[in-house]
Length: 544
Ligand code: GLN
Image 1 (tube, rainbow, N blue to C red):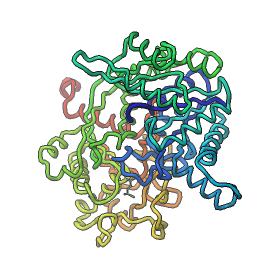
Image 2: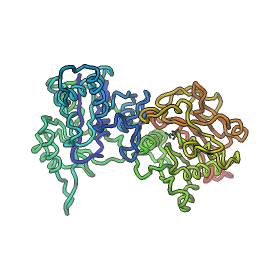
Image 3: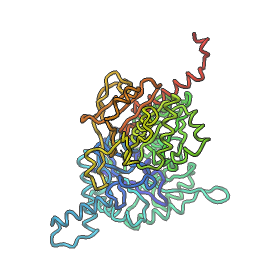
Image 4: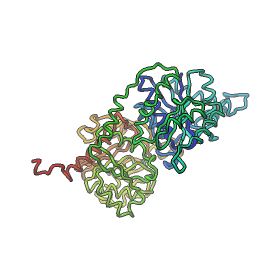
């Protein structure tokens, strides 16, 4: 069992998740099997009950666990699917310890943070490493070294490194090297302090990843080396990149692959980045560009929609088309005529997932704009449900049609609570979650985009389309083209529209750099086709 720990110092939001994902990719590029585990030192059992403004988007795994968004980064960088046991939280650990105490597993003893909580942490880490069968397990410790919350986890990792012995475990510390002062000098003091903090609890990092706006000089590396007790070649500079997918190559260029191979006593093999580099070179081609309107209520924090943003990066790395995202706050939209006017000129639109009544009117306005103007449209989860509400109101002529999530008393509940949700009282982990099979109608647009009539997609919802209105909708041109095994509506399209598609599930969660999601690729292609029609490069007469 080999373990590589990534901790963070000075501030949060340094890109520790990207560093961890990139280190994992570095090892994978050498033909090693790897897996990643994230520690979130909060008391929530999982991320599912948190607002996206707390920690960004809630990511959902195949098994339905609602997890931290970093697991999305790991899945994307590795092209591997993970399970819920790869996200360890304080809540999960304490719950396990308390359950054991009640069962009598610790009978006769005083149950304490050390050794019981730390023991449970080690047990769960070992279990993930063993069941995954990976040669190397990466463990990212959320938060910042010095936080009270992360202490038991760091202590457990220290103990684990002692138990595993020399050459089986290494610690990478990611810190900030800010640039300050009149001449813009990089400052190493915060790094020195945070490494001292780590060493005070018995952990000695062997690699320091210095984050900052620009590369740091050999002189600064030497200074960090001296104060932090790591060789200068183990001080790695990762300045901000135009895309996060550059980071593995930035690390590789500074010899991190060889360093890790040596420190963890792994077989030395040359890395293979052929496919990765191809992606990056297509990404930069800038073969045309489209403006994509993204409508949601958490647009202030981009991390709230991270997987959507990444899905478009994946399309860009495949088609070479630059996708420019324009953000529209759905709450402001109805009272912002300038934004509405801009929206009408968008090349394509996504209406985002979400919950509750806030921002719904703006989403409905946006959907109507896309439907009536022929703007390529993808509605995801709430965006899909609200497209049904919009269609019921404006095409079927049912002005009070609504989802019961917004208006429980609507006379036309076109979207309503899933039957099995009616008895659900607890909020944590109780939605319809995770990978579910979807059967697509042969000959439909969506089936042709996937090139298949059966797909597995990830879900996270409590409400669904009410089948009572579907015949009337079909008569007006909106067709159901995807259903779950038990008959729920999973996808619809309007065949007469250039591209108008809604899905109950979350395609963004399965998009990866090397395999972008077909629906996102298709949306960008539809936007390009629309540009072609509205401003053909070659006049129509000349083409004929
Ligand atoms: N609020 C809707 C539901 O619970 C949509 C959820 C979502 O967009 N993830 O069904």
